[in-house]
Image 1 (cartoon, protein in one colour):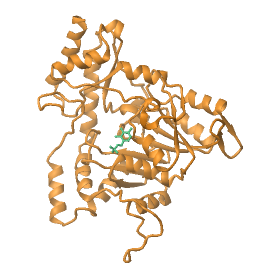
Image 2 (cartoon, protein in one colour):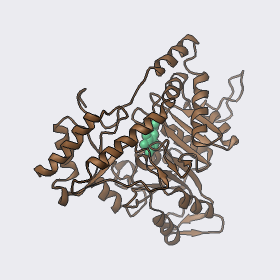
Image 3 (cartoon, helix red, strand yellow):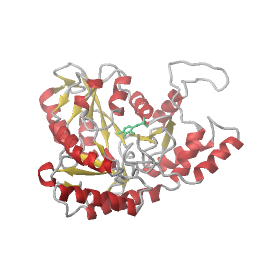
Image 4 (spheres, helix red, strand yellow):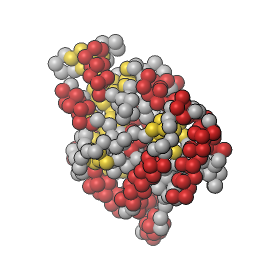
Length: 388
Ligand SMILES: *Cc1c(COP(=O)(O)O)cnc(C)c1O
């Protein structure tokens, strides 16, 4: 457990508007259903350029519902990067489908498009209507594209593949709200996008998520399903099995107050990434991912590759060294093809993800990180380099 004095990797930044909105929920006696959810849905959907937003009680629930409304079914297969938080993989299993884990590009850390193509060409057959995985005989029906760590996946190339083989495409932009490819915001590019408002994300709702889409039928279906598939405004009738996955008005109230400061949050994250890039530029064996000129990254987490031979110690040793100085840092996620939770899932390579998982450390990146505190982090890394 982090102590109060520890410099944390990604704590929330909470203003006064959150409490003001919550007071209004209480004054209006509107804790569960209410106008703040609708307002927050409108704000996020408009921000990313989709017509509809449907709030949920978590990003994981948003992904589950996105797969449902997109029509992903039992015994189908969905392609997913192996290097991500586990939520999208779990959501795929919630609908009875199976993830196929794809390795990442070493330069971008995102799902490797060439590997998707190789998987389709070498391991699948196309019937003219369906893509069938030769090994499992199951249809491959979708791709979940995660925009990893506040950077952007190569969504355009993946969208072309999805169109060619009639695959459902869902963006998991939980880590990348605000990230842009040209003037398009991620999460608003594919037909369906998902966000999370967990406490460590760019903005938080004190937990929550959202599905965004411009397809009214899909948005209506999602709204219906997250409200227990209630079929009548008066009678309690249900024609199918739904879920209690709705976002509450209390969470919408917090989320909407946070959204009012989203530009400041993005600017803070980008300034943090820039200061690390400058402060660590001269340190041998420490590297960051560059931002391509046509992209605009929110840098949800500022992460560095630690080259043990050149830096003088491994990423895990640096983590321990920073920890001794009251500085939290975290490794990447265990690649999902190695996770016991998804043992037996097919994976296409994975060596690059494993290598990154050994070498990458995410540094303190909270919106509220002060410049002096960030200076302490940079100094600690520099002195670790000289000490080694
Ligand atoms: C945070 C996150 C989610 C959703 O998480 P919840 O805690 O359920 O809101 C989904 N995908 C990714 C990549 C995430 O980082």
